[in-house]
Length: 328
Figure (cartoon, rainbow, N blue to C red):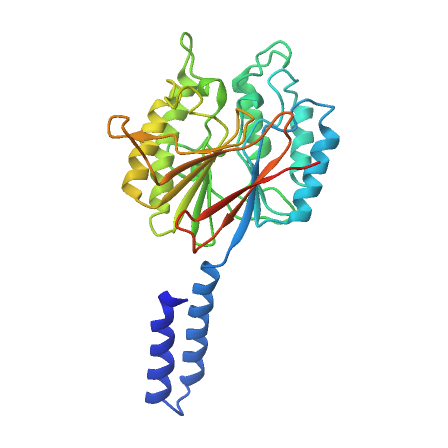
């Protein structure tokens, strides 16, 4: 409340002294109270949950995934993010399965935001996955899971999609939202080297990379007046000695550039590698220094069907506290 105490003092002191019997007295008081309450609300702790790479081994994982949903509904965080891979790369990529997962997402009580994984489309050409055309599966995924500007869940929050930006109309899966004075966003980066091929047609990759680079610029611009930024994606971009592969190189470089300019705390939450990790994987100054205001959190997955609870603490210099949520 300290930031707006001057407004409260001025309105009360000046208003009551200058207009002690005036009809402006009550409106001034209510205005000051509103500003003070708004400031207090922005400094309140809140929690959200991230998880991904589940259910993985279906149908055996269905009962456990339903326990995950029940546990998270009981926890009742402010919102939940699924960071992709709601199936394994060797399970069927059928529309019927997509519909089942869509229905699961709507059973969450809190708002749920979802960003795609590679197993939902890039890996669907595998024999065990049904030998689908990956681009056809991506189109189905976009239509089924991104037909609204609201989250999943019984409680909804409004999302702003990159699809509203001219030239990027098909990228409905890149979304941003503001909560508690912080900026949040998803960005569509997936495992399997982000669909980059050493030999073959890379047009989908090229187009989406262009969209993602523009999206990062837009997200960081939106975060300028916020206290910090948190990004969610599926791909583990740092699994090879912290040096990004060709599928992620430009995105990581852009992240580094924008984070350094931003100066405030930036967190990235990803799935893909199925191990809980917190680290600072971006190096700067010819790889000799760590980018200290960038933190990566990687979630559990596959056999470890657990989640990560993140608490925003306005008194913390790092903004966020990360805890494991182990689910029986």
